[in-house]
Image (cartoon, rainbow, N blue to C red; front, side, top):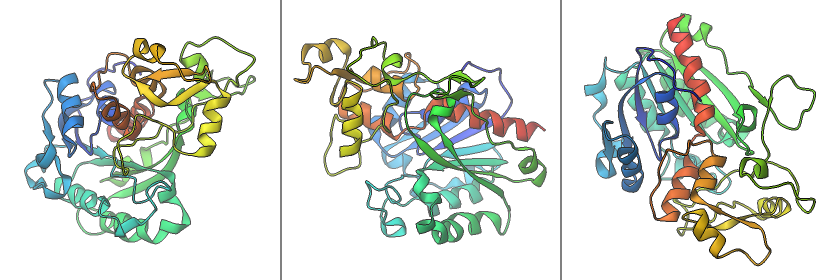
Length: 329
């Protein structure tokens, strides 16, 4: 994910979290216009890492309460990931009945700001049959009717196809104001391949390889299960495990997903009884594709929560590049 030259496009971020998409767009050459994030500690992460960015946090970062008309004509691309809990298995999949559902507010922001393009992402369950009516009524119909009318593409990408050592699938909605840009847009093709020795693509590292752990016949060389965020659950947690099945997968690789430590020194000081490798915040960030230079809160539950909620930056970077190419075509 190298830093690309400035492309002359301005990006506005909604639901910015710990900065996954914000960092993706910066590295892809976009000018950062502003970030909106309702969680105060996540907004602090953005401001700490990028003091020159305009960041609206806490109440000012609540997307549902913003008057977006002041941004009209000042934004080329609007991007963000509305909360996924209304559609995820862990969030009980209550859709529009969940008070955390922010897709109506997202559509309203897009129509008010009128960017040349938008990118919105979520869990792949949103693309399933259960939510097909929701997608049509709440997302597509408002954005493809009236003025401006967007041409919307929907697709799913897998993190492992872009070098991220994690099983993580996300659905993307990408819309363009002009038909020309929409037709020029190309869904990013995989750059890496997992466990395919004959592929011409770069190999995706295993979890243990990415963490710098030695090969050990006792353990499997596999991919990390999807990193979990505990910020919106019933209690704060320093675990990144999301199910009993995932726990077995972590164990098979000799990595302990519970009780993530603030750093490796702290992690090594309290190893699990199983002898598995205990992860630090930096390890979890690495699995999600963040650069080492990106810093996190000292409160571990906040750090791993922000990381687990984020779009893996290398994945977002590819989408950001594809959108820029379409707008420039």
